[in-house]
Amino acid sequence: MAHSFDEKRFGLALGLTKGIGMLALGVLATYFGWGVEVVYLLGTVYSGYEPTLLGSFMGAGWAVADGFICGALFAWFYNRV
Image (cartoon, rainbow, N blue to C red; front, side, top):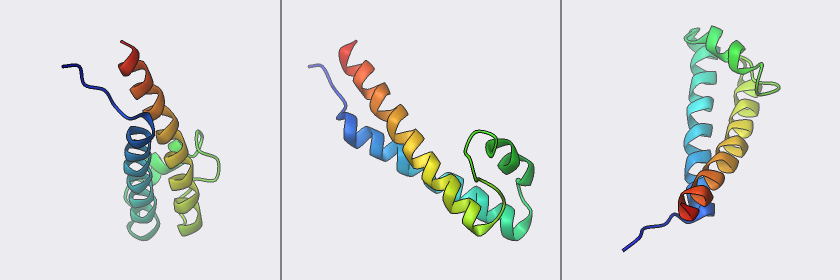
């Protein structure tokens, strides 16, 4: 029996996972100075992502949107192949 992914659920799962990771990285960079260079590098892709509390939430928002789109596209392609 062939298995398939629900595009919306897979996209949401990937988006939330990516968003939580970006938020955690931003908060760690803000309060502990860990991964500051990575946050600045990712800030070149995600506008507003910087090692501040507001920047952490902005990066998390971008990551949720990006992860949802990539996850939904992956599931769509997977189901077609």
